[in-house]
Length: 550
Image (spheres, rainbow, N blue to C red):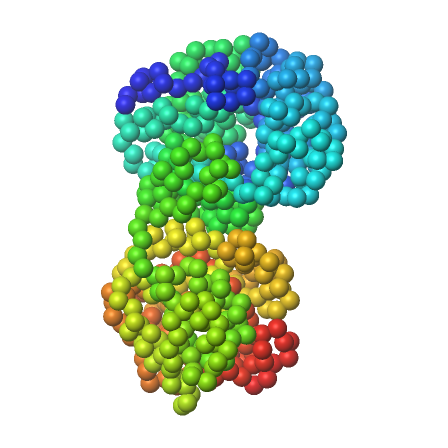
């Protein structure tokens, strides 16, 4: 499709969109400040930097310019109620826009609920509390009329990544303009007024405005916004052609990437064009640089704007091979009762190697539909020999060796997508995040059943491992992943739990020993700092006891 053909199919601010309230929405972006940091936020409220605040005078100028507009005028953010002059902006809004057209886009009232109840029409407001029960309760108390319209109280949203530029992915121009012509935001959502380098500007699309405002500190970045004068929104779409040529190739929305959950996501995605501005305000958040379309799992969502419904979509995986887990443990049932129910759901088959005398481990493994077999632990702890025996059961697909005291912490969707992109020539490992006490584990344990993973608040200690004698980093045995095609085995001459994993990983060249950037394990830590406890068999007291022996 050529650009002119694309333009013929697109909608401008003046066009009616029958799929939305009053056939149209035009947003007034008063701040991107927000108390949350939703993955894939279209306005960059998940990113660092000082948010710009629209002044009340600028807001009034914006409202006055919309005289005669037929649709909803949205007070937009960020979280608009955090604006220090929110009440004054609301008063200016009421002077120019009829009540039936006044909408609020917010996640929390932040003490402004009673004001919101006076100013905004709940039927045309978009209130998504993003799983916050406190925000929901405050809305219900101070603005009871909004109750039936509240979204996201029990369901997370799925956000497609907006800052993956199509132009960075080598998409043929004709295909790109064809995707732009049916962009969900353009066809179903909103234009936007915001502040760019201190001046009020208007864009045909809220993503075009977001890109401009987030790049405003780059002196080379062009000012594509229209000056806000009465009736600016009535201009024909050809008047916005320059914005479309600049901002649509810089956008990822038309790709309909599968993305992440807004609250319980596991990584951000960005491409080269926006990588310099994409610095999450949560410093430990993972950011994946997208260089090929396959990373987005295109067509993962049928419509980007249906972000609540998209939360229930099945996992999209580019390819799917069988996955088998192997855990070798003896007298580790106190850990296994916590870790195995979580880990088991990630694998097609699970093999637990233990001793014939370890009845508790056998019981837990069988309850979780695991294959149980027995190693010879009479003369030390020959972990390598036990793993090799389990490998004999695996005929195809991926193998993951993981310890009994390790939990995969991320949702199933993250695990699926990680595996969909693994190279079968490599061996993989991941970071581990230590949980130094049973009490800290118990704080996060409640999330296992509902989310399929464990989140431990304030307990994430990053650990990475390097073994220079093998020429660099190697994935060690708490979590090692490789493809069964290699037919490689662990050494069997070591009668303790150490070293065999390092020697095994050393069979791969350094370039094929890969640290996964998007996956971390939780390690339920009870070993002593001498580094020898449990290496020759179990010597520490049960998990949850603060005193250790051995």
